[in-house]
Length: 206
Image (cartoon, rainbow, N blue to C red; front, side, top):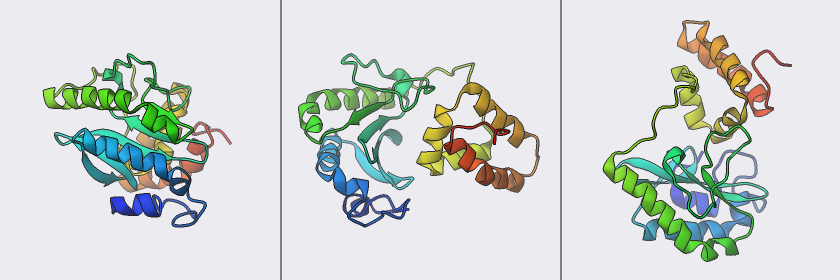
């Protein structure tokens, strides 16, 4: 994965074989991604790289992260449960994602047209960071093992796939991982489970 933000805009995230090639999604959506980048900087956000993607912060809190795919590119908000979404532009990453958390672009011209809206949403998220406001804890949320949390944090594709699983399938992984006490065993199981999670299956499904 890349560690330089400039590399993302010129080569890609470094997570697949299309890295630095003409078929990389960041090349396809380059104009739109660079316009989003400028909007985030104009808002006063601090640019960093996390999980191989541009991540923009305020008051030491993650605000948004970029993503580029074959069919679209995205601006995803952290702490999406707080966002009011007055313009109705936020979408869910998957059918089981709890809160709409991303603005999805399928055309680079959308960014310029939505600049005012994007800035207002960034400002809202920044205000929460300044006030130290965090989303209320959802009591129905499943408590994930630390090793799974770390794996999801370091692997955006895995995180998106896990969020899209039904609660029952998510719980099947938590139960399986929690049945062993050794961290190294849990890490090994997570690596083994990855293809199933990405495929939308539960821990015991084949």
